[in-house]
Length: 122
Length: 228
Image (cartoon, rainbow over the protein chains, first blue to last red):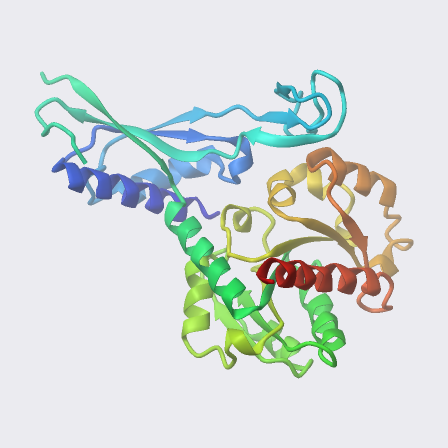
């Protein structure tokens, strides 16, 4: 259960960017989350309000977009989605020579602010 | 009613940890020390194996260890029996080590200087989930699974296998008693991490230790070549 640490890190990143832009209130935070990030979505959503409390993101929902797992096959050079992320087999040629190309994302992609907040430059 | 506006961020959540881990990696490289970490579930045998490794490497190499533990200092006491300098990182309620904890332990007078070492070992908190998110700046990460845990650990915790470099199957002396299916375990490891090297060991009886020590000393040869 390290999702509270992760939620705190998300808040810190958002607060830093918001402060640079002179933004005082964030309306929503968007996160890209891959299944290979090691972070459990539900546990993160549970921890989120606690982490956001008393910060610029208090009350803002955390909107999680699931990033797909794709693998690059060193055998046939194709980038494919494996049938399961527990079985990293190339969907094009069937060989088990896959290197993960995506699916480890744990990234704040954007946040929303109300229109009356200052224009962003930072 | 004001309209919401989108502010692009595009920032990795663990950017601070990753930056710090990169600094640590550079610092280890400059000091000429190879850093190797062990992760596993609680009770898989990290401490017993590391105690053996520290003992076996010492005639030839200068070694030390950092050990993460939630509360007790039992593991540090066990590792210290090897005669190697050991520093405990008590994490309290935190279920993993991060780069900052490693840096603090090294800055806070760990009882050894990095320059005086050939190998620094880091034993993570027993946990197959959380440590996978945190780069510690190590050169090599071993993930252990023991035969008493069954063959399907890789399928249940693929992320930790994905972030580790080499898998160790520990407590092989108990394989027959637990009816451990080694081939199934190997298949499961290859399924979540194609091409991952696997080393089977028994810290108690010594089987496979030469292979493990070979994998460890190979890291040093690689980092020496990189510096040359």
